[in-house]
Length: 210
Image 1 (cartoon, rainbow, N blue to C red):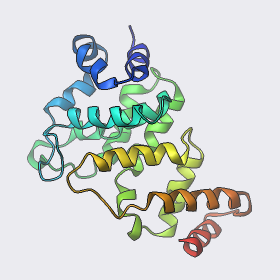
Image 2 (image 1 turned 45 degrees about the horizontal axis):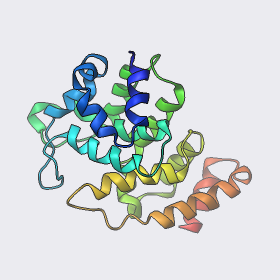
Image 3 (image 1 turned 45 degrees about the vertical axis):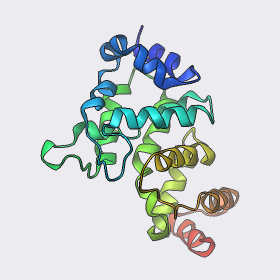
């Protein structure tokens, strides 16, 4: 069994967390990075789980109940992979783990998994923290995020399902994330996309709509 086979079998199951836990021996050989997250601590102030692996297992089960698209599920699974590289002296904080996560994703998946899995995960890794500060985001930043989603295999609904799952499984829920507003703004943006020829025009559109 290779990494792609393992990922597909796990994420095709009704409750992926059970597959990952029941096939731990195989998983540690094929996908060691995932299982190493069991020893990566989370802040108890914010998380129901004390380690990143268990946090991801709860999220992946939530997302699996909403969609069976493997690329979406893989993106959810990988969104915190950068926490694996957090320096011990700052644990359980994970500052800028989304930046490290992009490098870790490529290290794990390039040449082993379909591009649509990787491209989907890149978007979620890069923006899953940023969107939690939605009301403070500049129009240009929103343009960058929307463009990344637009050119990826993800639908806006897919992206927001993952963000919602990540948020729901924390003690400090970011209640000010306006999911419906974000989805509507994205839809309006996409409708006008062909008319917005440069980033400045795109930013002005977002500023006027937000």
